[in-house]
Amino acid sequence: MKKLLLIRELYIEAFKNFGNIIIRNSFKIYSWMCIALIFVVLYAFIFRISTGFIFD
Image 1 (tube, helix red, strand yellow):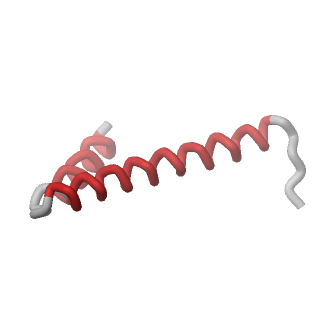
Image 2 (cartoon, rainbow, N blue to C red):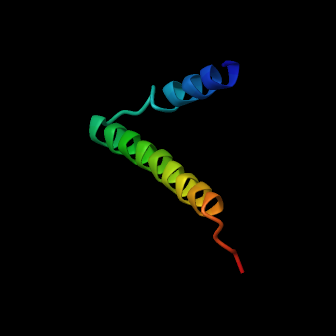
Image 3 (cartoon, one colour):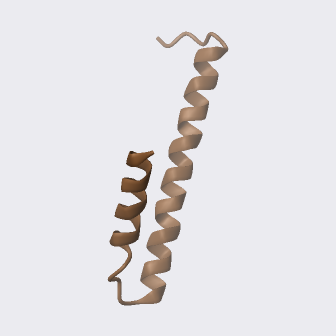
């Protein structure tokens, strides 16, 4: 739980002093898209391992 709070605090601090609201929102969207894509990759990898896919 402590690591989750630390990540949350880093996220808040990263976007606190951005000047332009358009740039701030676009970076927030970009960061959430990256997190979502990482979870998609992890899901695909775990799915392949669970179905017995042979990695050559």
